[in-house]
Length: 358
Image 1: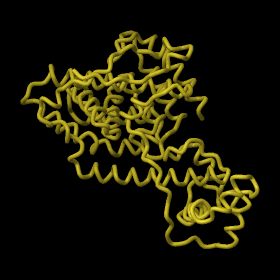
Image 2: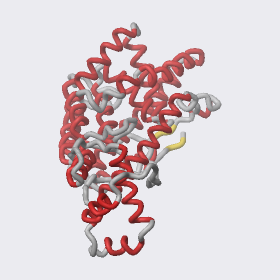
Image 3: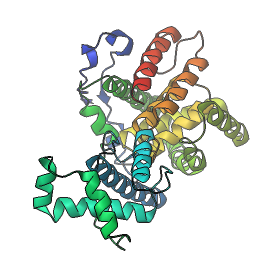
Image 4: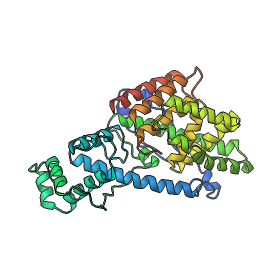
């Protein structure tokens, strides 16, 4: 089997023992043996492709807004295309400064004015940009002046087009040691790899050739069927959404064992094919089945903004970590084979880090 190394340097921190799972990074060859049967699993769904295109365009616009706000002194933090709590606060500060209604959500006119002013300064007026870089001109005074000069926003604006955000695979390959949040990323990457290995095991040993096709069909259905619940992840507390998923499971009429096996299979396939939305759909199903490790994984998706728009929410991610703690039992946790107490110790560290990121 080909091995995919994870460049994880997080052992430099003091509580490395609680975070390190010590698992190898394995890339089984099952998909190759199936003649590419799995390669188009999620890519063949036209609705998914359209949704991914819309997500990408929204992220580009969000990154352009974040870049402009940071330039004018309204701190959004990292430019990641996810308008989380800090970005919303920056938008409110901008709106207050400009005497707009401070809602935390830009109107079309406000967004166009912000971006056209930002792009005009940085692409059209090099002399002015130089004065700004030297501190000779106040960018916020300039912003006010431009508003007085052009009270109405133009109909069109050429928005900045920053690079697309890292995929889940790239996030795990390029993980570094730049701060405590990398510890959280390392946890996600370890669990992602374990989920891939578990999925491959199920496909290779637990399923016959004739039974694979129905499972693939179920994988394609998960994302579509769970779409309403995915849209609630950014707005609904963990306990409420887990309860909703438990109700969804009961109404499905499927056996717990069958649904659990199918969702685990789909999760690993989604991770291998870098489809965060499909992975999140499977995670919500598994969370509804009350397995704490998958509740925890859902929290990482929220903290890192994987498969969601405008949903990088550290406080809400903490809620999912707390829900995972509440779901622990005396038995070993599935997937990691760790004791519940070991996992709880890790989750406490994760919650501490997330609380410091708000």
